[in-house]
Length: 325
Image (spheres, one colour):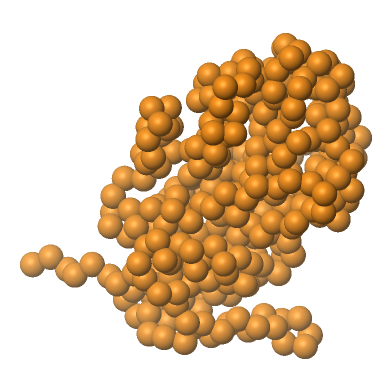
């Protein structure tokens, strides 16, 4: 006799409920009922309002700003699900905060990405589904399975139409993003270039020089994350000085803080293309295109629930042939 497959339940924290509702619509299940609120002193209170005993539970919660609050909320929701006897708990983290703190690059500093991985495991997470980690080695910080998806197929679908018929170059705004930029260049059939930068502080960077040719080309800057927009705007200015025509930026996660708004408004960027992995702020006088990743994450959830392979979701061969996954 085979055991019946546990029933699928999806819940959401407060970080990006709109994305969770879109994912549920794609998967074909209602969003689970739960209460998430804060006490006057700031403590988080969670109550799951329906029976989940023996169920396959997915909790959707990007750890975007306020990062610590949303991370703690996720941990408390996981603990509530574990104590309610869920069969398996998968944390769906479209944007994984603290991923940039993935190594000791100075004396006496933590590896916070590893700490967060330990916290999730200790809380009761059985599996993690995430997207576009800042550093892929963060997957190795977990002692549980991690399914790592990429927004590249979603972005490529839009960028192919946007840049159709134009002579294009794909540029990495720093040396660390070269592999990602190479994948975009191959998918778009574009040239590849790199901007070398120097980081002056947590909020300021300076583009120093360009490796590659962008003259008389439309340029796509690609990165996994923009927060202060310093890297993108300084790179765009340098590219314009080297004869680039229109400069576009494609990033997976647009976690725009206050300092980013005037920078984008004054920048040489024509458009910022991103996803709804986190809620995206609007910027007056500047074009931001937000693409939906609910189908990508929803398909990942369905395949994990059905014990199917998710590898085809981050294989871009189909996208190169103009097909969707």
